[in-house]
Image (cartoon, rainbow, N blue to C red; front, side):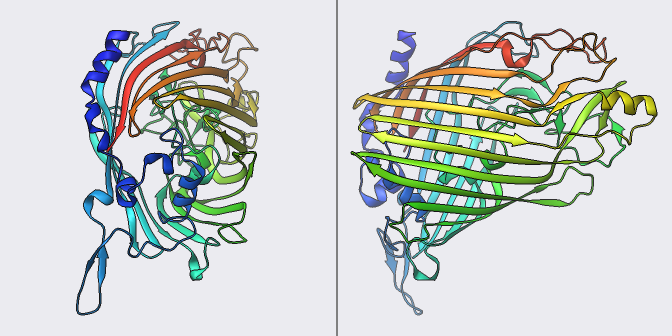
Length: 502
């Protein structure tokens, strides 16, 4: 391991420490002004983000660090390219260990992908109180061929009515949870994506993703199929099956929509609110668009040199998913799509060199009914399936900057899944065989910062879940019966990597 770390350090030119991301260049500031342990934001950085990339308490986006161009209709101000663009490179060496070999090219050998993800960021202010953020990503992980796509693109109109901090509007593609105490992004342990086929039902999960399980859907037996009641067929299309481990709803990496946030008493108020709408497709067969609604409240406070905050949110997604069964070789859908409602709380505390934060979420669905199937026997069998209408997730992380160049952290994640609990009577050989499973993961990380914008790290994800097997389906689902459950099959993952932004 040590030779690999040494080689990684050699590959990174530590003499490039002068290269810092765009906002630090623009304001001629150290990264520590906005960050605690990069990429986590300090309170000042959170206020800078909420104020549309303007210093807290100001509306300076019209002229700060900009070039002024005079014209017949008056002056125009522009950012220089280096003040609005940044690049983030990530790559690592991974080794996974499984109880049973999952197959389909997934094994326990070392995997080297350098770089694995390259992000290009463009952000800044167009004029006073008008800002933008665009992120494009070159990704070598999600498909056989590397691709470039826009992940996020958002405009923000800050300090509406000229009143500082009361109302700010975001429009576009963005992470709804960016103002929450434990945001989907800005994690010390970047998510490691799943290896799974979600175009089949049940989804073939070769490796579960490694991310905070408070963010995941937590639901088994659900699909996003836009089909009418009584329709049977074969699942097709990427994303058909709702992966129980995928981040979604308020904690999705990106949503199309609009939100308004601010502090009712102005910029100095400790209370932050957020109200938003996200636009997605219904799963009821009508091809209509659904409007998800969410709201979040956060309270910030300081005591004895520590900064702390506590958040709570509510998110409702109407007709978001369809309860689904595989019977006699065909996919069968419940009578109607179900709403998914998520509520959650989160908190964060920072003092000196320690940063602690957590999130707890609960998802709720309706228990499905099955009355539109081809015959009475299938209806009776489907209605004998058992469904858990709630699911919970919990994530807790602590990071300690024990040295200016070193950080030690650890995260604990637990998912108590819901959704499909037991298959219909007659489909399985044992009535007590369960489909949904609890997942528990411990993830330590050690980071070395040769400069504020470069991190070399070693991290591990250790699965401490109890071993469980998938139920015997009498051969109805090939490659399914009696196999180690995907939730417990992955034993651990060891990763060595580099994360740099410039």
